[in-house]
Image 1 (cartoon, rainbow, N blue to C red):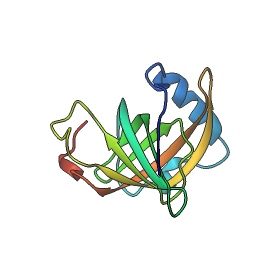
Image 2 (tube, rainbow, N blue to C red):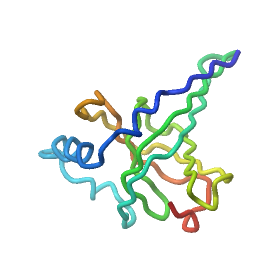
Image 3 (cartoon, rainbow, N blue to C red):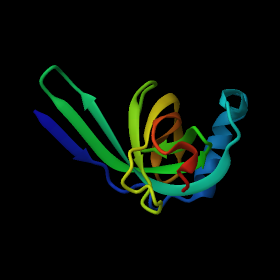
Length: 141
């Protein structure tokens, strides 16, 4: 049995300034993100599609598709805001329509996740992800 779900496009109307303000407010007193980073990141804020496939039991599978908001990226990682709660070590496929790699597979593993309240969007989830399979340094947003 396959259960497929498409998330509403909550990320299209998300303003980067509002999202970042919520994130920075959460981070005061918890230490900077820099301690988690292995590589230099560049700001590249845009909406991208995602897909998550998860086994819910031995006989059923859940497929979720929707949009995430990319906040920044590096050669082997990406920081995203996503409307679904993802968990550490979960695999997420990201799609960026504007690239020449539109049909290639970009598979990321979630390294950490954190709930972030964003005004007018409710709780979103910040996730730091590491590239597992994809175009790596040749993949440009």
